[in-house]
Length: 246
Image 1 (spheres, one colour):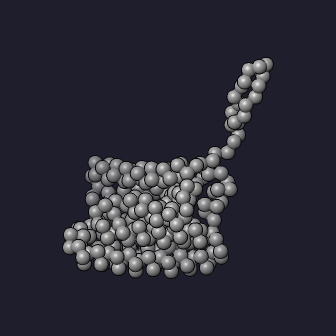
Image 2 (tube, rainbow, N blue to C red):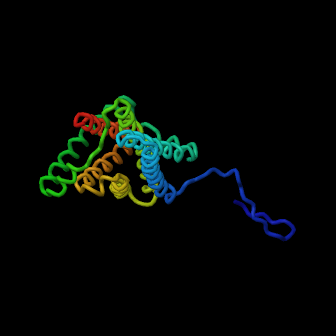
């Protein structure tokens, strides 16, 4: 934006070619908004599927797939509107890809063990939390395509979409206004708050905060590939456990 004077009259000239430069508020607010939209779409899909006579398992599978797909799409859109330089930094892989991939899987397995320990201790200390965990029903369906949709949503869509949103956009927005040592745990709390089951089972919420914190550090050190693979490893183990229990 520039100011020009013509015949004694000051004119305000808007430079419409200036690139979009999202600030910290944009980066902090929009990822959570995308998650809210994804959850709303999930709930709406359940209602529509039920109205068309779909079974509860079919409705759950379609809704989970659709909601996760919307979150992934939202993450892609938010990254795409960034200036080219910021976009490249957001999705960059630091260090060698194969070494980063291996570290991501190893960190993911470590997160699984740590989260399992937190939940085990929490449910042992709090019988109410144990009952809530036992009552948490996450159906994966008995038909192959139910399982395929849910597995795709949890193992592919969720890690990609949530890492783009909470690490690539949210975390990078927070570090603009505070030190990384503060931004990392704060982004982890926001990450946990975006999961509905975190409000029902407190050990699960603590485990999600821990996982989100670790993913923030991994993203900083190794970039998007590392955090996506770590997140995907956690979700893969959880999905296998759900399928084995069904």
